[in-house]
Length: 445
Image (cartoon, rainbow, N blue to C red; front, side):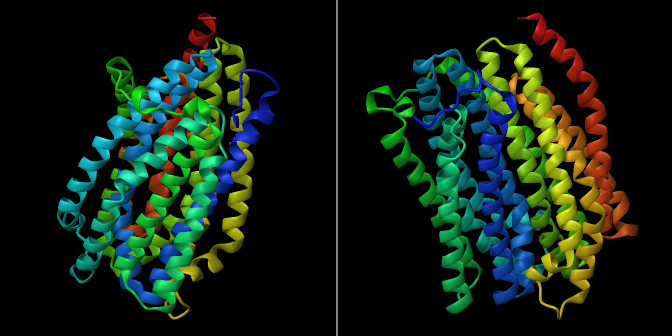
């Protein structure tokens, strides 16, 4: 089986081997997400680029809410795996899948009905409201596929397999990009087609995960007779996952409010913000991937009763975070102009200049979320979901407040400085708490 026992052996190789596939896979996913925006901006127009941008915060709430529940379930499964409780591991997976089927169908229906009111609440300009609502409704219909992919991906990660689900995601990403190029780039279909190819790609990745587990991972195979919801495990999953979902959703909710501050700046600012947000994702998501490695390492070793090994893994994870920041900071500073020109043509110099000024500042600030993500990974791994929620709430709240204070005078650059304020205060909360929590965990050994 493609599993990884992180309770034995050298720490750094475990984290590196687990995190690198996550980083590469997520970078590929981000590439195709960015390609959606590139194709929309280049082949449909700046209105389409702005429409995708205004829809993105709502989509992110949906995706991160789902992934939050699945991350919570993954922590529980990692502990069962570390403790050798295979029957409980399967029962947790069954509970997560059956609950998720109902949950995702409700989300799909509610989202499709509420798409336009949500966009109106965000002060989306009238001239792009219609196409934004069409795009968002179609995306919501893909919610069940998104949930099942995330559930199986989390189960695989809990047993140390960080590559299989990402391979399927990579395949579906390339498929989505190819379909976009053909149907939008060559055949001239509009933004609705972009949403439909995204949903189709999500379905492919979900079915490939199910196929792989049935063929290769008997530990995670469920039979019809084994499908059930364990009330005790569901309560724990909802406690872990619900808090994690709230924590995961804080950032996109904040981005929704931030989008409300950016929208009055005009279509150029909206388009620039969409472009730099895609570039930001290339910094944030790999940092989150390393944090996921920290979470799995900590949870497995907590299940095995090895608190001192947890501390070594955490420090190695922070070193990986810092190393990645050096890379991404340098890359963004050197490539900011070519990166912006991927999204808009040279005939839109105002948009390019807005984005480049933002990136010149934000490149240095990427170090802050590298560390906040590392601490979040540690707290998730030991089951302190309330701490991750509180930290994210602090960061998001301050970010939103300072965006509204700074953007009237600083424009788009104000959003970068607002992020820095939130991350700094979040670290001031989580770092001192880390030493107290670590001492208690060692005391339990």
